[in-house]
Image (cartoon, rainbow, N blue to C red):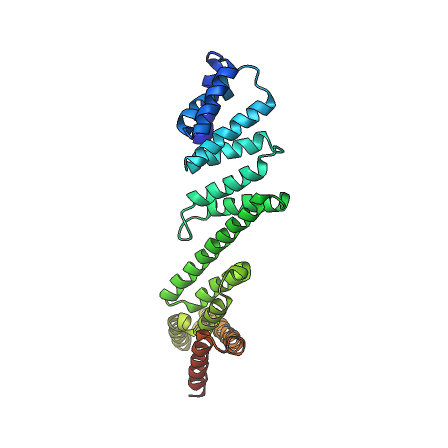
Amino acid sequence: MKRFLVILTVAALFSCSQKVNKESVMKKAYKMYERGEYSDARKYLKEAIYRAEGLTTKELLKLRYMLANSYYLDEDYVDAIVEFEEFLALFPTAPQVPEVLYKLADSYMKVSPGAERDLTYVKKAEEKAEELVENYPDTIYAKKAKQIIKKAKLIEAQHLIDIAVLYEKLGKPYAASVYYQKAYDEFGDYLDKKKIEFKIGEDLVNSYLQYQKELEEYKNKIKEVDSKIKKEKDIEKRNVLINRKQLLEEHVEKIKDRIKDGQERGIKILEYVVKNYPDSNYAEKAKKILKKFKKEKND
């Protein structure tokens, strides 16, 4: 918003200042631009855009494109984003639109902080690239845009995987499996499916580890309530305690069901990994987990 207000202020200042000869200032702008002296070119480009009289739509379009592109070529991607967005708003059907969409998407990707941070710019890059591919599929920029889409998908997937890894480190494999599954469902085509399938299966089989402490706490609470029930003489208070015990027991059963269902699904996934990727490291790891699980279950 601040950036937008600055643009309006600059525009207002230029509009209120003395007009300039368009041929003279445009000639200087083009000359500087062609030399690659983009910073100097911008001075004259802005003069032409905001102060020159009698600009045609075609001339204004060219000047605004050059202004935006000069920022991009100077690797000033934040200002490039502002100017490219302005160009698209002013000239949505211009022949430069495919190129502008690509460079806008690329600029958003260049200023994005990566998978470990906020993904707003990554998603904006993906959005612009997808718009380009959808509306201008036969242009040379569509192919480049597909690479940006792929990169954006990989970053978004890695973001989910990083969350899953964090939950694993916190001793919460079931929660980790949820994020691995989300990454697999949304970005499976961009990931190593063998690895993600194995990780989902492994974490589901180990899901009981996440709930051991919680189950123990609830079992102790049930014992405490049960002890109070035996001692309580007042019927009304005793019924309240009985209801509380029932709720605690129901919650314990829900956790047990979640663990059971998760482990059953995890076993099937690991068996799938063994069957479909027999020569992979993940198949060997899956076999060990399955063997250990069956042994513990029999014991």
